[in-house]
Length: 369
Ligand SMILES: *Cc1c(COP(=O)(O)O)cnc(C)c1O
Image (cartoon, rainbow, N blue to C red; front, side, top):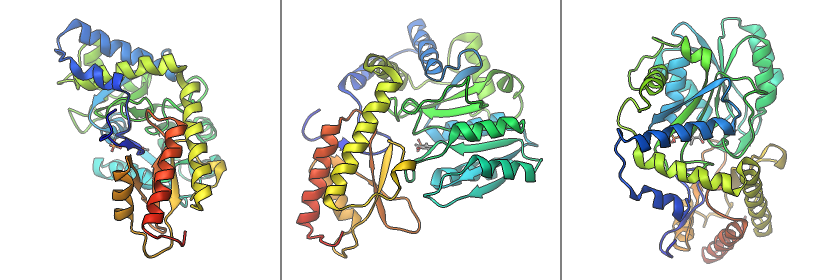
């Protein structure tokens, strides 16, 4: 990477390897057998990460992550279904918004941004409303980096005979989920997060029977995962123009993922990144928003310094000039900023990034932190 290209400490797009970017130097035709094999191989490898080959299909979809979330809800929730949306941040709110726009009946349960939803909450809510057919949950809520207790919630949802839709966008590939242990109808992720591909496609692991019985649910042609899957199963091709370069980059990123040691290695590196970040920020006196126990090693939120000389925009620009891209806070109540732990970065780079943050705060004469 050349000196002018900053390191992205953001939850996507994120820093990718030169090898992954290099994989985009070929123009593929969508009718090309080799490209269709690339797609098939991609889906197979993705399914292996969740141990889902026996029970689920992997349905890729063009677009950003939200496209895949919207497609999953539109395809898998029947028009007379009702979704219980569990919220503790902006992405949970987006799930509710999707239900609203798609005209699916829904109710919400919201906890504070530093409070995980519990299985007991879900149990109580499902007892109180038998009309609920689906529960929608954010695994790691990227607004803060909070981890919701997915296995426990999945268990309760299954005990009630309801179906679970998981937005695992920012956790998939780094935090383990085994489809044979954690029951779900859909788990949604995307190319440009923990797999370290480039942005441009999402994918949904959809339970085979649920997908098979979902014909006609979707409000949209382009967002219909049942149709997307049926066409791909029949022809080996994407229904509409595939994001060829994104597919090629993700395929290359997955080779590196497996060479690195797969999910355990990816998790370990991100955990080390997060640990290095927390230590160094602590040394500067910057406080983490979440307690360690509920912090996922994906993205961390820090309280902004109290000093009136601190302004995020200036802080951001100065840190960027030193080679690191930070992420603004997304909280309504408190002023914060975020630092991503994911991407093709190592703990040493996290420490260098925090050193740059320290220099900038001194330059800005921000003393009250
Ligand atoms: C990144 C992300 C998404 C998708 O966002 P896009 O901007 O559409 O890619 C959805 N949910 C979560 C939890 C995310 O982190």
